[in-house]
Length: 274
Image 1: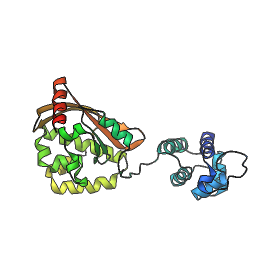
Image 2: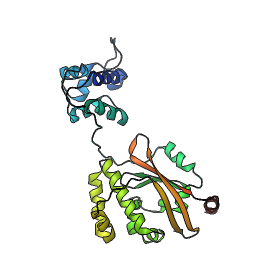
Image 3: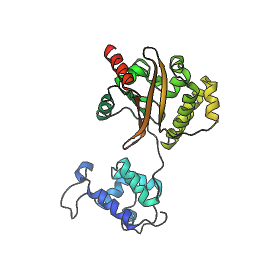
Image 4: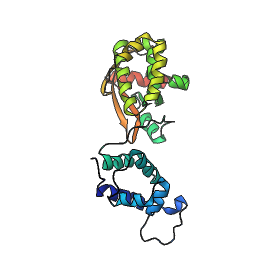
């Protein structure tokens, strides 16, 4: 949708401001004809003209710019999902992604991956830094806790860590998939500058990465089978599936599942003995 904003956009803005408590923003509660913030208060928070904001709610203010709509979204304290809906109403497409490196995961998300007893699971960022992992991942994949934070990156491990490389049964196929899926995830999340820095670093350290990066291959993360040479378990096969984290386009979850009951039992004994 382009051009004149519809009444739907105005109603959505009105509903959003009606949910807000004026006292939270330092505005006097007093006696108000309707709940929530007044139009002029939203306009002040968004640093725009009260008249123009009123027209926008009434569907006669013309199309706002993305910058103005972003300020309005911030003024209304919209969540990422609400902000995306606002942009869909105004422009027919979601806002341009702006990447903010996450600092960690919620306790709820950590508890979720911890519940997978024999299924290695990790939470990674759009730039494939590993933020969280469960016990099974530590004993089967990598004990990320022993690595410096800046080395908990899947690309750095695949291309620059000899032990990790040796553990891949088909290293080249694994590396090509990781590069293609990483490119797609990072660009989707708006992390172009972060991508450029990491790619420059890896190109200087690995001619193989440089060659794969020049191919401009893009892969969907999807699912598949990972085959590892584990120092204790020997050869092990794991199905893997990638999942988006609801409400967090900057995070993804990868869960690895043993292909057989016997492999699950081997992982369980390894965890219990570690």
